[in-house]
Image (cartoon, rainbow, N blue to C red; front, side):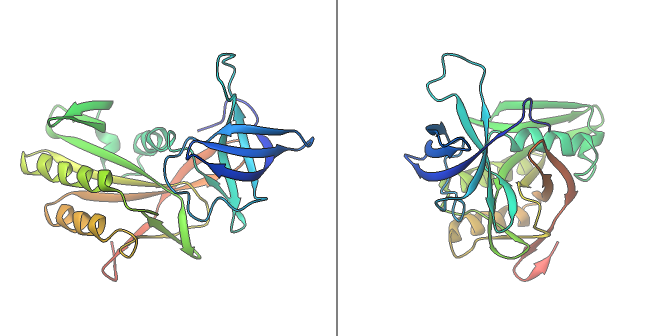
Length: 238
């Protein structure tokens, strides 16, 4: 995924109200920018961090700049949670995610269940449909180890249980984690930060829900999904 225009360098002053941050541009101008991430962004909000911003061409936007990338731990980290679905679609079409790329139809944001939307519904004339849920990952405590979630996510646990229901109904169910950083080659669930999510994942895995972790290369011009990352669970790698 290539950014449509060059990103703008700045320094982070503070992030607040979840959706906003104050930054200082290279020329010393102070401005408030939108933060397209509702999570805690744990480890990515240090004052003075180098950040990269996009700028919208929409003149009606209250905050024309959006925070896209934070430099942390010596690497660039993508924080825009609106991008993982696009990155996952690119990875699927490129054949990185098992055999999902062999499904001829990929439909985004499809309603299913009673009140939910699945990120992707994959269809094939000779196979059961595949329901694919996507989550963004950018948290790292140990060098090389990406972790999810970085805070409690009741919604994330519900999504796993909904995948279990689709699997029980005879469909294929797939969980995809997109790691928006270049320095990770392993992935693990944050059992200590959200044990209920980890328990939901165990239920899902036992029910036949598949899981894949996609790694990305990130620079100021593009975020490119380019590999699968090993997943560790209960001390084992899958």
